[in-house]
Amino acid sequence: MTRKGRPFQVRLHREKGGFLYIRRLRSGQSNRYILRESYRDNGCWRHRNIFDLGEDPGAFIEYPGGNGYYFREEIEDVLRKEGIEYRAEELDAVFWPFLDEHIRRMMGRAPRWNDGVRKWRGISSGEMSSLQSELHSFDKRRLHYLRCGRVDIGELEGRPWKFLNVLLGKSRDEIEHTIEEMEGILRPHEVRTYIYTALNIQEDFGGRLLRNNPAALDGEEVDSRFLNRLCNLNVDAGYFRGVDGWDGEGLHPYLIKYLILYFDNTFRPGLEDDFMNAFHEGRRFNPPPARLPSMGIEEACRLLGIPPEAFDGLDRRGLMKAFRQSAKSAHPDKGGDHETFVKITEAYERLRLRK
Image (cartoon, rainbow, N blue to C red; front, side, top):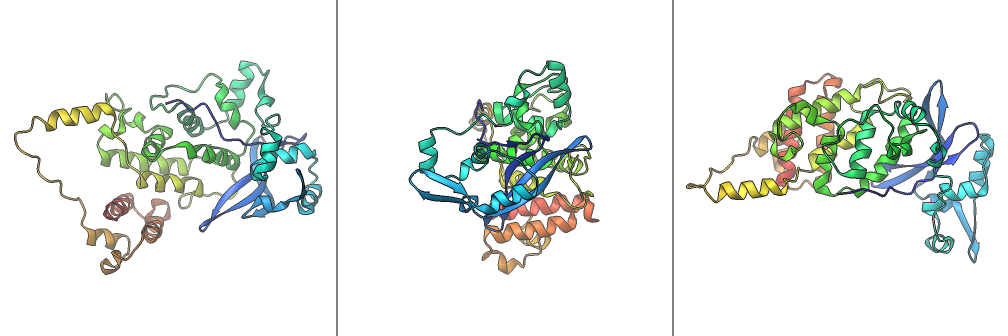
């Protein structure tokens, strides 16, 4: 499985070292877009809000007729107020995904000349290694899997990699935005393996032969290792470098999605596992005993604060809401304990499968 492409994302480069990008945020059942800037400050990259674009950035583009268009004065006024110098072509690049489809078709191709990657061309290997050393290993492993689809990544530190240049010169928020757009290529059965690889959970299984095949490992042990890794990342100062106001309380929004994605999906066994299972099943003299659920429905409902009689009428969105509330209160960083937190996730998985 090879990932050669990446989503189109253009960044407006300023002479003072800042970059503009449009950040998509979830707001209830809809998306909200914010024009933000990544900027260098005291040796690290930070971000700030420039302008709230609402649910549709395309609403700030006017089409007077023909193939012409221009941006509403609000955009130009706020950029001027913030002292951001720009050219019309650069603003075209930032709003490219939101231009009318007909206009984009007439223009032929996305303006890639200002995509923030060519800036790093011509830099020596030593300089590139120094720049990439600021990137967190979680970012490197995520991007590697999204490009190559491999679990056995190996060592990424100590040498420059061209595919990592897309993350250079970006704040933590913009890196999350970039990777989130790329995660859209993942198929449901790849999600858990992706998270397993990105968090380098296989390292916890040392010399085990099947450490790169998580579907063949003990599920409860893998889940426990996942939660430990996620909690450790949640208080990793290197990962949150440049993020203001984060004190490690609760689970950060950047990481909550991985908790949900992990337990909303399952590992897909490889072809060799299917073959071995069929081999053993065909040689059983007696059928295996039915596997009893480790947790009853009533107990699972109790852990999530759901009245048992209300469970049948609860949709998946309501179930997810109950899980989030229970997980938040039971999280170790909120005064809860690890064992209860694990039980709550098991209860959610039990009820989700029942649904």
